[in-house]
Length: 350
Image 1 (cartoon, rainbow, N blue to C red):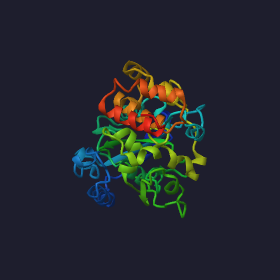
Image 2 (cartoon, rainbow, N blue to C red):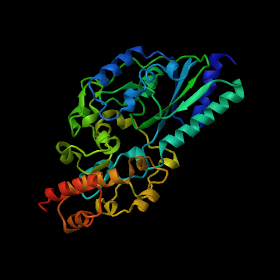
Image 3 (cartoon, helix red, strand yellow):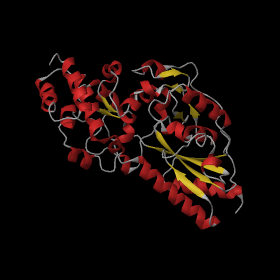
Image 4 (cartoon, rainbow, N blue to C red):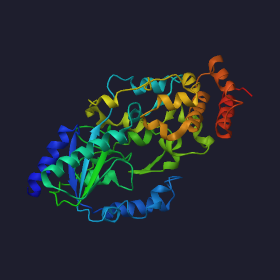
């Protein structure tokens, strides 16, 4: 099978496996490498040391997986159907907001399994070939590769935007030694003069076109950071206890986004609009049981309580809220206790 026919079949198989789009690109990321090195040199990755620990492997696929000739890039829509509208939840400060990518089953497992199935189909037709599948799990510049594969452009908020699907989707890659037909990269940038995402960011984390200071980003503060959340950001976090979608919610291109057809991305355990006090009452066993198979579990129980304590500090003062905070005051770790005390101070409670 020649490279054109095989590439066409790969895209057909990808669609059959639930991917909304498949593109193919080369390993050339030299321009993105310069951007990455500059970003890291300014410390904008915060405590995400893994961003720098692999050196240039992130921007050099052939260094990560020797022999790589082509990269297959795939996208899969994830916005959960029949969920409470994000804006409605954000406005109700008694509720906790969880980023919509995390209200269902962990995307890492779902997409990796599909990519492996795609690789098996290729193998059945082509024979043994070198490959490795990635889903946000290794030093891979996935958005740059997706752009180069023709899947969209990188918006001012640094998320990939597809002109027909917005940005509510996941990305995955297959590094392969197959000489596939390469797609045209997406060279146009359709954000224009719009800066809605920059203006709406609660913590001003978008410091330039396609440039994020992770240290200010709510997704970083509530998911990646393992220490205390800086006080200057706590009020700004509001009721966002796991991630933040504000820049996507305001993006006009998401009027073209479609809800996911995947049952695994449907909301589980009412996490699209949970009550803050109820979440704060979860035991560690509750947390483990109710986040089984979820991306949320990776932050651990302690950071989960830390984040919710901040949310309760920003909630309207009620006896229920204050009692919930006081009840956890004595039997919490130092990290959680610090955020509980801050929350109580917001309600003028000592």
